[in-house]
Image (cartoon, rainbow, N blue to C red; front, side, top):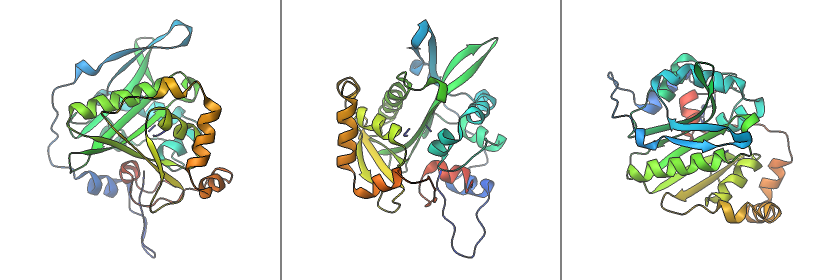
Amino acid sequence: MPSAPDNSATAPGKSPPTEESIMHASLRETATYSIHAYPAHLINSIALRRGLRATLRPVLPQDAPLEQKFVATLSQGARINRFHGNLCGLSEQVAAQITCIDYVRQMGFVVTLPEGDDEVVIADACYVLNDDGDTAEFAIAVSDAWQRQGLGSQMIEALCDAARRGGARWLYGEVLASNAGMLGLMIRCGFTVRPHPADDQLVRVERSVHAPARARRTMRRPNRLLAALNHALPRWLQRVQGSTTKVTPSGRSYERQLLGRVM
C-alpha cells in the first residue's frame, strides 16, 4: 500500500490506547457527519481473467458489512500487510469509519463482483488528505484469490486520479519492508521507495499524482525489478525480509491510528 490497504505508539508504563480513543483523536470527529455528492464519475469496469468483469467504485456507507467480510476473509499475512498487525476483523465502528467518508478529505474505493443478489468485495483502497492539502496517505489490499490480475495498479491509478481532482499533489504510504509484493507494485506504478526515517520495519513510498504509471514497461522484466529493489534499499531491508515478521507500531500511519494497537 502498498500492497491494501495502522500505526500507534504507546509510552512506557502506559496502557495501549483503545480503538475508540485512537479513532476519535486521530480523525478529529465532529458531532455531525457531512457527506458530499457521490462521485459516480469515478466508477469503472475492470476486466479480469476468465472473461469476468469487476466494478471499481467509490465506497458507500452501506458497504460496511461487505468491508467486514472482506477483511475477515483475507489471509493472516494479507491482514498483517494491510493493517501492520494481526487483526482478525473490523469492528462495526471501524467499518463505519472506513465507509462513511466525505469524498473530499477522505476517499475510498472497492472492487466488487456480483454474488447472487448482492456484491462481494475483492479489493479496496483509500486515502486521507492531510491538512496541508498537498499530500494524501493511502492504503490498499487485494483478496488473496484475486492477486496478480492488475487490480493493485488500477486502484492506484484510481486513487491518483481522485487525489488529483481533489487538489492533492502527492500520494504516499508506509509498507512493511517484508512485503516484497507490494514494494514491487509500488515500483511498477512509479513510486519512489525509501527507508522509513523512524522505523526500520517500514518503507516509505511516494509518487506525484501527476506522474504517469510505469507498469507496462517494468512488468516485462520481473527479475530486473527485484534486482533493482534489492539494490536500491539498504541491507537492513534484506535482513527484515529474511526474518520472521514482527511488527512494532510506531505511531505514524493513518491505518494504525484508525485501528489502534491491534496486536
